[in-house]
Amino acid sequence: MDSSPASAGTPKLQVVATPIGNLADLSPRAKEALASADVLACEDTRVTKKLMQLTGVESSARTLAYHEYNELQAAPGLIKLILEGKRVVLVSDAGLPGLSDPGYRVLHLCREQGIPVEVIPGPHAAPMALLMSGLPTSSYTFKGFVPKKPGARKRFFEEEAGSAHALVAYESPLRLAETLGVALEVLGDRQASIAFELTKLHERCLQGTLSSLPAQLGDLKGEAVLVIAAKPRKERQEED
Image (cartoon, rainbow, N blue to C red; front, side, top):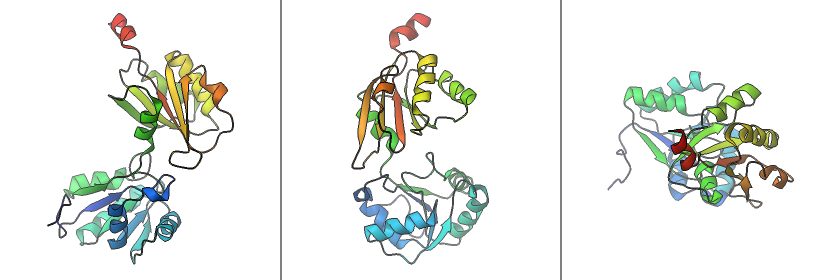
């Protein structure tokens, strides 16, 4: 009996999560999907081939590039392959495709065409960082990468200033100190945390306030995940 969302004969897109650092996080379901695919749509075909090599996944699938620079043009071609009966698997270099990685265009076309999407879950940095932060987890807003330009970066935090939800965002270590300063200016001195190198050997999580975290940064490596507490309920009630 097939326990997947759609039967084997139904055209569908499989979205497969890949490790964000630790190869052991590639699930058995993910390995099976990669091995049985006819077409692998990859953010970087070299990265996917290396992942399969290192994890012992054997596949004769055709690999196609599907990244932020060709997503608009490549998505219709993937839909055509799915409708022709091909097993199409979408992967990014790390994590879940479509969440701060290429994937939205083909997912949207699947919705328009009535094509089922099967998501094979796995590591995702945002909820991991939230759990490690020790901050309330009942609700949160994930906003992807903090904008690079100063004006856009300030607006990014202004939009969340009155929110009742924790804010989770990705940031480059090169801009992290500056981003903490902008967040402090806009949001006030809230509780926050920063997770680095998730699932890797040197994984760490810094906890404190927006004003105290810069002094803890030290030698920065890898992409950072910033978690900032929601506006305190008392302050929201006073404003109301």
